[in-house]
Amino acid sequence: MFSTTLSVPLALLLYQLFKPVHRMQAVLMALLLVVAMPISFVVALNYVAAQWLLSGAPVVAAIASAQREALGMLFLRLHTHGVLAEEIFWGLWLLPFGLLVIRSRFLPRVLGILLIIGGLAYVAHSVTRSCWPVNASFFTSGSHAGAHRCRVSDHAVAPDQGGRRTQGELAISLPICVRLE
Image 1 (cartoon, rainbow, N blue to C red):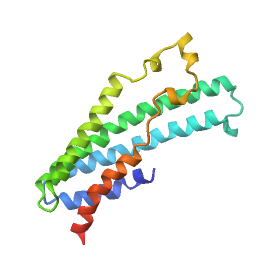
Image 2 (cartoon, rainbow, N blue to C red; image 1 turned 90 degrees about the vertical axis):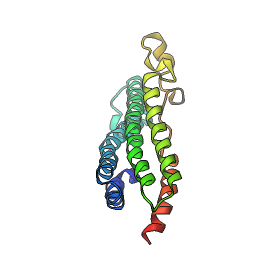
Image 3 (cartoon, one colour; image 1 turned 180 degrees about the vertical axis):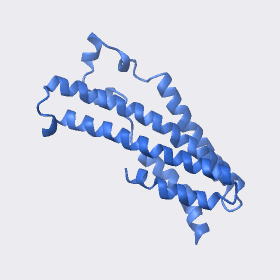
């Protein structure tokens, strides 16, 4: 959540940095970066609700165990779909960012190409996971649904994207920091 909170200052900083390169692409990049922020917070609430329900937190003690497990899995699934929606914006903001890096004279062009590839990969992953889920039992109901109840590892709980995002952010941050000094 900390990296999400830093989206607004990052968007403003990158906008100011790339405004001389192409103003409208810089606005689009900043806008797409900031739009993902409220989605991130809502998605995080789904995960917190799932944790409360599945851990049996005192807040949900009045709900029967089977109902807590079913609701917990529902919130985990909502979290997964929310991350997929969020991932589209993670990819979309990288496209104008990559184009700006390519057009700029102060950053290596290869970084721009890698940003565009990364952005396309995020969008492609999100679209394909939304259209063709990995686990078909995710959508089943009836007698098969109970067999997978509360087995979190069997369902598509979104992997921590933070590690991969952080590596990419560090790769682009270093040349920018060198340029600013």
